[in-house]
Amino acid sequence: MIDLIEMMRPLNCAMACIGVLVGGLIVTGSNIQVLFSTPFILAVISVFLITGAGNVFNDYVDVEADKINAPHRPIPSGKISKNTAFVFSIGLFVTGVFFTAFINWVCFLIALFNTFLLIIYSLILQDKVLVGNLAVGYLTGSLFLFGGAALGDITLPSVLFLLATLTTITREIVKDLEDMEGDRRSFLKKIVTKFTSSIAERFKITTDGVKMKYRERTMVTLAISSLILAVMFSILPYYYGILGIGYLVIVLVADVIFVSCMYSLGKEMGNRKGYHRISRRLKIGMFVALIAFIAGVLI
Image (cartoon, rainbow, N blue to C red; front, top):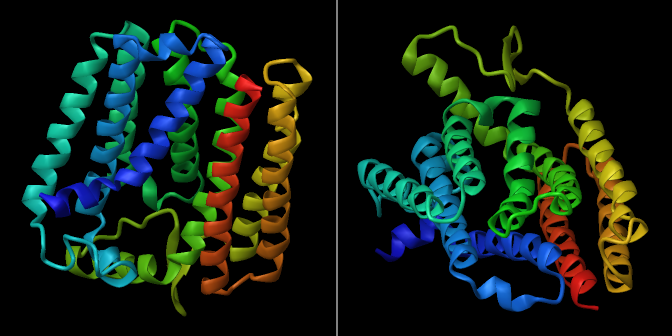
């Protein structure tokens, strides 16, 4: 059971719940008591379960790449069977969506769509350079929308949806670059073992072997461009009076981290360890940005 919980990545699930909490805070302002209402509690539980389900299902689908990139994980290490992981993930998905039926129809539709997208992402979209990254960006940003929807308003959380989507797209591109070697071998194995000519968008077969369809420099440029937009738009919540001075002060710290990531992306091109460091720094920046959102409401 511990291994199944590990596959859910509880820390990531908790981070997703924080996004929901922030989306709710933007709607309620100082009326924090509303966050303890039954509908909102159900919203947080649903997001935890659906996020965990997506992580487990992704591990179920991504076994071959994980044998190279993360052999310590429960399935490639033999601690959990693929069938057990599959059944567990479906159970989490169904339970999470079921709870949203007791919130409102907007939350139910968002949860249903996100569940569908998480499954499609693992099966198809994770091999698509841009579409896959956009999907993950949307899924992250939708947490703010979901939190607002649970309390009947998605207008203000929409700004946070935009910022979260852009920064997540950047981090997903960096993670793609970091895991490129393992994903390339997994892709080649699928082509050989399945005797199929179907080629994932991220890779192509050339006379020199399997190569990425898009040049590394192009992917780095896309990552930097997305991060530039995020930094530019980060001022909007304060400018339009959505969030207070507390947000502005702390989000500037996040922006400094993001700018340093832009510089490192250009400098570390082709360095897998460098991409790993940048990915971790981006995660820190995103966490600081979440703190900024919370401070903007409370200060």
